Length: 161
Image (tube, rainbow, N blue to C red; front, side, top):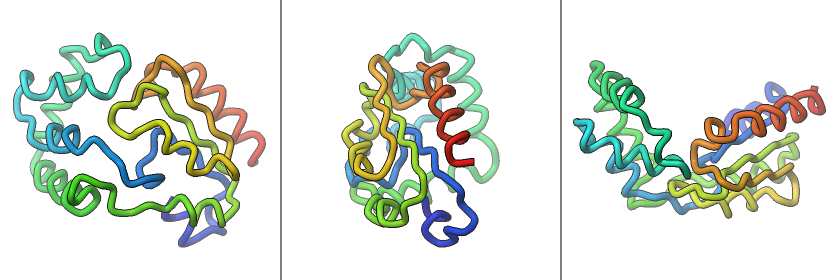
């Protein structure tokens, strides 16, 4: 979204999936939990917040994310992002009105059961974008409803092309 606003000539279209930046609300507990988690026991319940079907959080997923979080510099980067983007438990930057005014062809996809960023944020662009809120999916709608999301993306890109 920032690039579409700052360099509109470089952006043909936007596809936003459960995107930050369309409203202030966010589950700050999720952000803090993800940043602070250092063990499987800490991380698994945080990751389960991302899915309508919590059973999709596998041991492999938890282990892979823990490995990533242990890389040099990742902890500091996550803490810096959290404090600058989600200070005081809210999203620091809301770009919805700028995107609506820019008239860039936009697709907004959300999982109806998103517990991280409320699905009603999708409606911030309802007058200027194609909005799809998918039942039975959470914040990771692209994983839980991959076929639907891929079909929406393919159609959107073809129209904008």
